[in-house]
Length: 117
Image 1: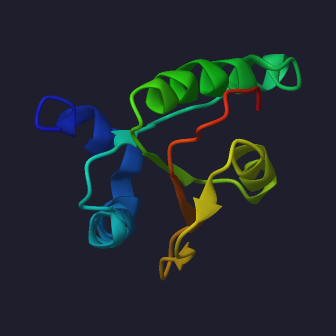
Image 2: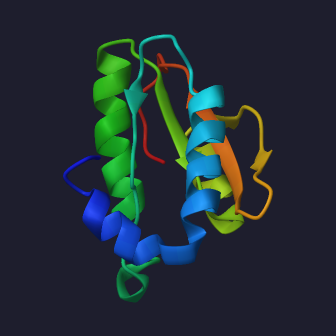
């Protein structure tokens, strides 16, 4: 975070207070139980709809399941909540940060059944 601070400050500019509030809210609801944190899962718009994100999820969640370890992520787009729900994630507590975005923290218990997203 410290190393990336100059780039973050330039990118956020006047939105730094909102970004700080989002971070505080995310930290407040982040699970304390050991888990895999799936950060920045996404697909470039030109490649969306090709199954790339599903393949990435299937691969990582297979490892989680093999190890009987849960996974956690924060969905930032309403349109992708269903993708994660198909992968057995469940929204924990939706967050609407004042002046910021709507966020959907999601938890997934390890599955006993292997399969695709």
